[in-house]
Length: 492
Image (cartoon, rainbow, N blue to C red):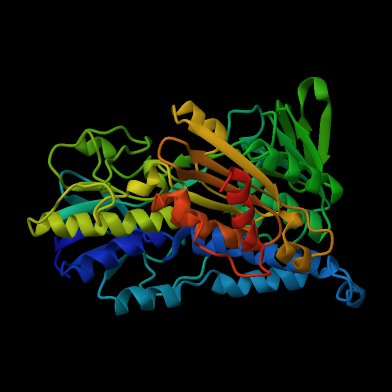
């Protein structure tokens, strides 16, 4: 490869977002280079979505078996923690990305190993790593062998920042020095700690609390806000908290970590101010994310190192002259979810191709626009019970000035739910824009609730009138019958 090779598109970050941007550009007839300093496939494949859900699934499967008379009698043993961790390792391919590398090469993408950073308009410096193909690692970068080589790539059309985010580390005295777990450490753990304190009651904190609680840890969640997972409907939070407590997990809300002492291997003393202190073998910090932009050369193009990147709906970065710098995925802070990052990537790649060919058109819901980011984002929290939601909560809809009518239904009263589990406990809520007569938000809580959210997403994105939605007849007996009950409760 020449010292300053040129590509139509240069993508920094080969997680699922970066992979999809590059693939979309190649499919559109452009050349693309993809730069990755760790594992191709990124956070989702190795330290987030896949390993965490692989750890959660055996926990859920066991709970579901125990909830059905006849099946419950067959469950005579305890969960096998090491078998759960081995199954997780199969999904991460033991942190080897060879198959992802092969995919990228087969897709016609040029893959470069190393640290990518901007060094001016449409110019990206790559500090090359020793490993040329499949890399087996852990949470950090490989040190490689020999001296690093510097290369500068030139982009004819666009540079895309898809570097993602890192776990936030709040400025609590003694916290950073104690070397606590972050989400990466929790999802790649080799052993189950005896006592685990989870700092933060958001999605990551709650999912990991349930995993390690089921695997044998004594778990305490410390959340400084008034409730768990505050972004969802309040009743969903309440149901999750009750489920946590029923499983022996201690939930402390309205309480914050004031100090941390100790660390591995002696253990942690977690100070809670007036609430006393907690002793733990491990401390997991799960209090949010920060952008991975501190060392990618933003200052060379007039932006601030370490900032989130603000973009328009075509994912074009604002505050940079010209139409060449894009940011997709976590790094733009629009919706920190893998599926939304991939959605943005498709829109971003299509926008780059369209601009390169002189055919770009900015329009809501067009193929070059990530319109759904604003009010149509779906999410599943893979706890027990599952919480799935899309669009706006009732509170958010009212705050947005929408004329709202909200209806609720106990999912346990649906025949399909009663068949799914004995004593099924679940709840559903639909938020309707009264002026337009369309659904703007929906929430489902209960076993299997994650499989209900896509129907709701279609209703919200498609702005399907309620009178037409009434004709979408749910199969009987399925949990989806809750849609009929919600519409009946609305008055149809």
